[in-house]
Length: 456
Image: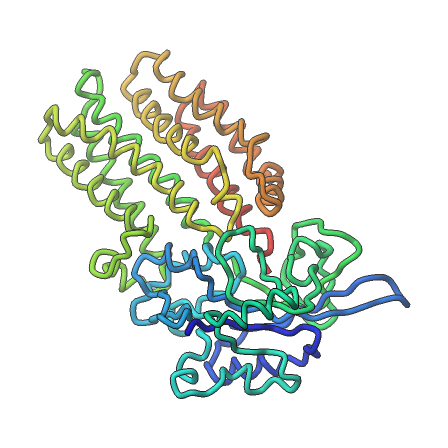
């Protein structure tokens, strides 16, 4: 048996009983929701229509939250339910970024992720989920998706799923839902709500024809620490590459550069650990790893990077160490592109065609910065800095092709920090230390804008 939800929006009266029952049954923290109702209006007075949609976890067959979770805290049961083991969760919030449906939140009391788990404890006791049991219109159904009859009926009734283009194969189906209620980009960007308040207006301009008049706010899980981590990691990568190049460039001091690389690697690790909601569990990345997650793979790369940096710092220079330092330095910078690609909910990140190349150029530019420190040939420095500046500028016109990705991209390139970062990157051709500020501003704009377009 493989469980799925069917939400009959033709029968739903938008009473919020499912929301209340879910919060009571699962002790959901105040201000957070595992299931919620969104109201959308069409038309102008007096010709106005209003419709509701119940939003929640889709228990996807190809769940991106499971793939990105670094500690296998999220997993798929044999019955198709996507469940969460809080005892394994480190509170990294990567699953929030991977989910295209805004269906996961961080429980501030436990410091762990939380989501709809199909009331698995009730299912195991042969009881219906709380939302199903309480619905006065029987608008929420539990179905067995392995039964051919179920699939046939869903096809006959033209059931739809949210964001099928994301390739997650959602297992929550809607009957009679207003398409504008399921598509967050189809509503007016002013997000004028009649029954609730949202801290910020929806950046997407949407259309004047549809308005979200009831919705719930969603947090931006990643902030300045993640942007700073990208910048410090680039400096760690650049200094290790420069240390490796000391094999051929006698002006470079591999031992000093190794110490610099070790310092920035430690700063990077401190930023990552301090951003966890359960920082005391950071070692789960090593003891309970999910090898498919680029958070785990990145941790392994940072570990090797730190070891190589330490060998340089203590003066154990060798040809082998130099040759190993070059690819590991590049990997340290570039692995974040693959991590962001697993964040399938944030299309600016996951669909950015330039990101791997931009991060590669960022590492080379950082290496050029350290080369400037040792007065390396100016033409070599200009090459490294120029490639990064060119790719950073290319982001003005090259971005994701998806609708959400395009809107986030527009927000990024219009943001003052992005424009200031481009100016500083160009100015670094004359004075390379400005590159550090350029990294910080450009990375911040990228992290910020990627989370600004609503997912639900």
